[in-house]
Image (cartoon, rainbow, N blue to C red):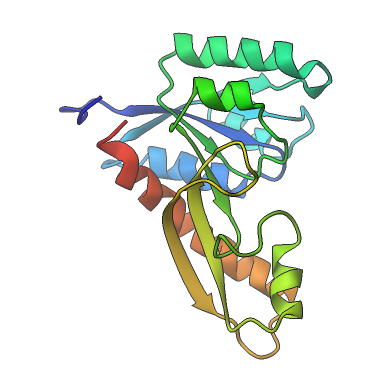
Length: 194
């Protein structure tokens, strides 16, 4: 699609399931003077997701993804995103699996942030597993989403040293701080090609 010119910004949607700390971080980033993103939609897999508070507070449109009618809901979400010229979907603690069809329809334009140094420690309970295996480093990864869990091409990673006495809870907080730094950088890296 080539480089975006002048004051044009990238329209994005953020998908969440829980507390929305990465969402809140991206909202703050979108409001900065030099920001190049317009956060148009927050899509949630639950109407009880705590992160929806940030969307409401910032007057961002909300879409609830109804997983009881997954395929119908996916079709509706895709239709809304396409008609609003959304160029990038950012998964931020989105705990549901998107269908292959949905991913294909947004090919190369769905990214996710994961709290480990992929390809190691895909899936859940990453911090517990990292500690159990006496790893020296951990971190986070932003990657493209494909049909396999946490397996898409890596866009950017950041690592930190694990200190003696670090628990899963301590690591979780440290890695979350890293995630907040990394997600905007990953979007910036992709900006020219979207």
